[in-house]
Length: 324
Length: 296
Image (cartoon, rainbow over the protein chains, first blue to last red):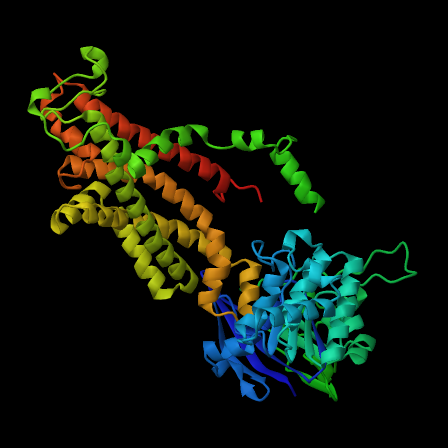
């Protein structure tokens, strides 16, 4: 087990009240494994990621509970300088927008070298340049020697995203967190980039947490899936299991909302209502107002995570024979 | 790529980027006004027609040469002690330039540093710094300047200190605001994710992105600094004799305003030219670099 998140709670303290952005999230990632975290906007996916690297937007947001065990050590207990040694070195992250992740005033070579410099590999300038060229080649930047002196604006969107990936893997991390890495890329470039992620993972054996709202991407890239809704994980399990027979009504609804080939002329399925405001969550299960299988009990108590079979869990009263 | 080409083409109105068009974009008025002042300040002692401190009672109160019709020895006339007004105006540029530049630069260094740190780390440090800024901004600048210079004693160093202390707040505010917004940008988050320490992020990623705004504040404050220096030397709290300051020349001419208009007018014009030049330069810089006017 590389990473094990247990009962993580990250709350945002706003004027309107406490927003429980991440509310008791538990999941784990094995070495070399790819975990997909799926959910609608605002369900706490990104906040979960920034909690793992301890970069939640302070002072508004705070990690208030739980444990984040990485290689057996609790990251929440670590101080800032210890965390700095972990970031970029052992856990790295790719942000959503490749256009914004590069500083416009520095060259590509200069920025990719940052990871090497920060982590104190006191090597000479030429050897850093060699390492930068190496890592750029690993992310398929064509003729990296010539492009080192280019500025970000001279790169295309896909190349910029790959450069960001190069910065992230430069420290050879054990875990790479990719927060919606392809949202701002067009579809063909998306596909290229996902294949690159997969390839990097195969080469280096690093684990991957891929945050997305696109089930297709998860299917292509991940070994396991966790579905989040309103700050909680509602279902998790291996890819085949979850995709073949979703156990939670929300997961089921997500799948029904996908367009299918050969289904012409029909309206797409739509989950009724809208995601709840995190300040005004309904009592009981957060999903019940939108659920097509709602029971009386759902309106009162939040269902516990119920183990369906090995490695498959979901939080729904129906699984506990609640139908009776 | 195409977007950038298009954008630069639109900015230039489709004009070719010739030397001529580059010259046209320079702030010519500001340069024309400031350059002579700068030259006088730096090289003035090489070409002053007379020793600005030389007293000559025989030649006292001569009007400008074109009025007296007695040759070009004293172009701007002489004062009550027979000192050459032109030479003194040229010599006065030095004190003005040293004091206002140094003061504005020191104020900038203090303000930018405090603003950066306050915005980046936030918390109690931010609160304390910004409340000090608020409090200081509610005290009239001139009053504060008088208070400081009377307690420190007159002199060049004092005026520099006064300008630094009075002006740093503006930088702190502007820098803090800019830093707060740059701090949220993804490349800063990315640097943190990759484990860069705060000092490195501030120096490498935030500072280059906020320095434009600080530069704009600096040039706009240059004009105010010149005025403040003149005011302090008018009140006798500026540089001390034998150094010359425009403000003091005006102060000395108070008694003779009715009879010898050239005594206050020429140093007054010098102040006006410097302040106007600095303000025009500041406006030009602001139009180019102010993030509020910048097209992203």
